[in-house]
Image (tube, rainbow, N blue to C red):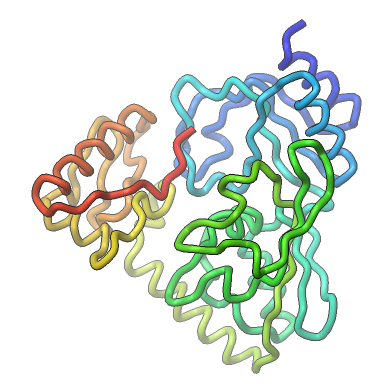
Length: 301
C-alpha cells in the first residue's frame, strides 16, 4: 500500500470527506488543473493535527488549499494530499466589541459581511477579493490601499509536527504579498483581527464603491487567478504588459484580458501549459522592452 492509500484510509477513519483522484479544476478559480492524488476535507482542529502528524510519519506530502483563487495547478495534477479546511474552520465570532476571531477556512466575503453586520470597519478593501481568510493572511492580501497587516493582530497555526501555535503581529513579517508563513511550513488555522466601530451605512458605501471599481476594471466574467504578477517597484505590471502589446493576445485557451492586462483569463478550456507559456512570453518581452522583471504573484503547483 502506498502513502496516498494510507492517508486516504487514515483520513477516512477520522470521518473526513475524502476522495481519490479529485479534479483540481473543480476547486480553483482558474478552472484549470489535473487531479489531486487524494483530496481531504477536515472539519476540526483535532482531526487536522492528527492528519498532519500522520502525513509526517508516513512521509506524505500535502498541500493546504484555500479558496483556490491564486493558484495554477499543473495539467498532470498533484501527487500529494490536498487538504481543505471546513466545518469549525469557517467559524467567525466576536471576542469583544471590536475584536473578531475568524477561522482560516472562511471566505473573505463571509468575513466582510460579518464585519458589516456588526458595524465594524477596516475590511472594506477586502470586499470582492475571492480568497480564503487563511490564504489572505498567508500572502498579506490587499487592495485599494488596505492590507491584511492593517487589521490582523495574531495568527493561529499548527506546525508540521501537528503542534498548536500562534504568532503575534510583531513577528508576522508582513510585507508586499508575503508573511512569515511563506517559509515556516505551518498551516494557518485562524486569525484574530482588530477592527473599528463605524456607521454601517458608511461601511456599506465603501464596500459598494470598491466592488464597483472591481467590476469596471477586472474581467470577473471569466475564470482567472486574479493578478498574475506582483507590482514591480516604480510601475504597474498591467501597464507594462499593455505597453508591450499583449492585451487580447493568447496561447491556446489562455488570453491576456482586454479589460485588464494584469489578468490572464481562461478564455476557452485553457491548460496550465497554455498559461505558463503565455507568462513566459510576457516576462521575456517586458524584460526586453522595458527592463522590468515581472515576478509571479500566482502560485504554480
